[in-house]
Image 1 (cartoon, helix red, strand yellow):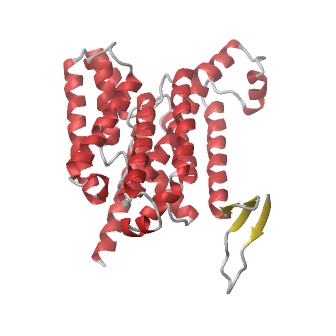
Image 2 (cartoon, rainbow, N blue to C red):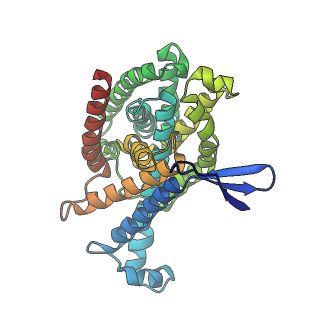
Image 3 (cartoon, rainbow, N blue to C red):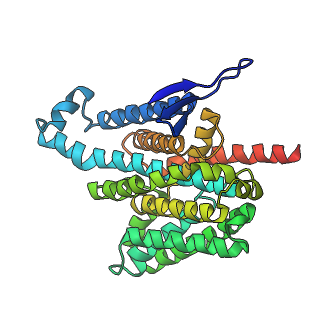
Length: 355
């Protein structure tokens, strides 16, 4: 492997090219790598703080001893049963939301084109509610969430009249699909018992409470399988953002690329929602923040995944420590902060159109 740098002219910095043999060359841009590493460091730091703070917190210096099995039973319970699974779900689900958001924003060519806005998260929530409340015992909650997400995106596909080739219609139709999905959720809550309705209502807000190792395994396996697929779609999606005619002219199968990308995003969103509930605005904000910091074109899957993980871990830390003695659902924090960011995007888009 031989690193080479393209010649520089008039102060322009060119990306570094790594050659892997005579036929393979990989372009490495330092800024996105630095941004991704920074997000990972923030996630790890927030994770350590999450494990250490609170009445049952474990001091950072004691973590190696507890991990080696030399801690007390209380410490082992706090780490392995309570906080570590919650932290793992937050990081993996945040990464899944970030990648799904990056895909949808690329497919729709719209900064508002995220699973939150397009109705995918609400569809997954409706499927999970149906599995847990309407037809309990017939299908598992993850399968119900995935089915609901698939039905929601199918409704969006059919409702646009042009499939995924009409980005702006996708957002409008997605809002309608999301409203209908939430109406179904409310109907399911009305028809169930009060105790079950209260539990599901907290979950629908977006919660990481009582997460277990099996939840980490579910979202972790899905992310491990689909993240390479998303990375393989990065370049075709980047070309498709320039226009269908140009992308087709350089040999990109636009329709197949968009369809496969949407399938990846649907499964990622369904898996994340099945273990956390429909946590709002992570999928919307993470790709935007990552793209602004990396200053790069295209979806930026790795940076979006790292940013999503950092955002959700930080939001969960804030949810646990914001009000002493009370642990808020993490969706309350993301909705509050994400709403401000959504208003910023709307004002920015309005100014751009007005000009």
